[in-house]
Amino acid sequence: DGTTGSNDLPTRLIFSTTADGAAQITERMRISSEGYVTQNNLPFLFGRGGDNAAARTIPNNGKFFDTNVGSQLALVISGSSTIVGAGSHGITYASGTGRFTVPVAGKYYIEFRLKYSSEDDATVSVQIITNNNSALSYYALNALGPHNMTVCGAANLAANDFIEISNNSGGSRAFYNADAHSGVSIFLIG
Image 1 (tube, one colour):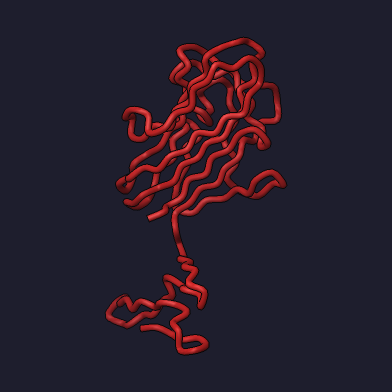
Image 2 (tube, one colour):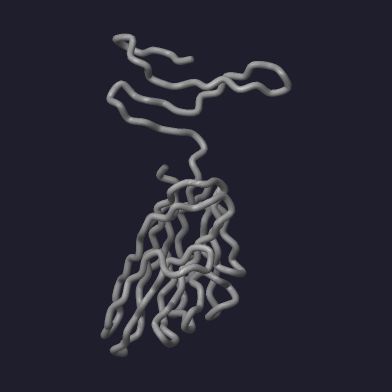
């Protein structure tokens, strides 16, 4: 099924499903006359740090946004700010573990931004980990003073797989967790 726009070009795709034997038509995808594709209900999570206090110390192998580690506050995933929007659909965040769990299988884009806060010259390594496996992606540097970092990657995940972000610097490191300094973006790309 489909509808047409100007010049008889399809502008949206409609799929029929049945619920209790009755035909049901629901728009699931739209294609504009310019070829842009939008879909309803794609899983995403956009979160931001909500901790405007002093830096938090995270131990080696400690997870970011885990409220049981380094006295961190929970990631903010509702509302909005002038720095970055926040919200989620389908992807869940557990503040007591720092885990992000995806609802359906697919390829996901994952991005984490943070600010290292120490004045010491130290090696800093932050990793994105899926299902307790080796790092999907990591960022390592020798930092003398505060430094912004971004770690990103893509992962092929199954339904209910989880993502964690870990300090793997070989020792404790201090990071700012304010909304201007830290945040997470995760969304289904295919």
